[in-house]
Length: 109
Image (cartoon, rainbow, N blue to C red; front, top):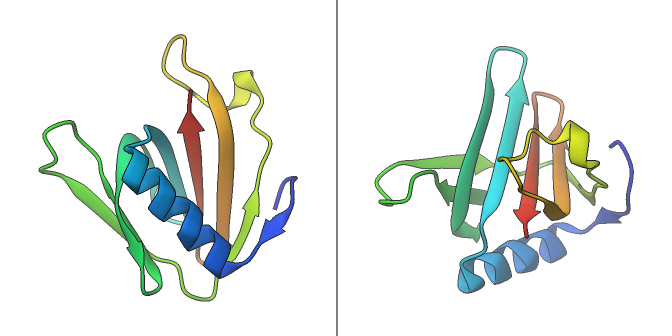
């Protein structure tokens, strides 16, 4: 984990459920040994060891991640290293790690 405080699994799901209820706009960055993905999104669901995101405005495309056995933590995001949309800023970010992938979820202002 780059920086920031580690959070519990329960707090991670509570936070994502809150972002779902508020319709918060997010930027998702996923990386594994064989795949990288970056997408603007909103939370579709967050429970039972998984988190899913709508990745288009029409809510026809989704991505789901199984996050069991992960480490969760807040992360500082510098404006220059986030690949944010033009004029976009990250309010906060959560990073999720497991031995086979990393997922960064940025809450956009």
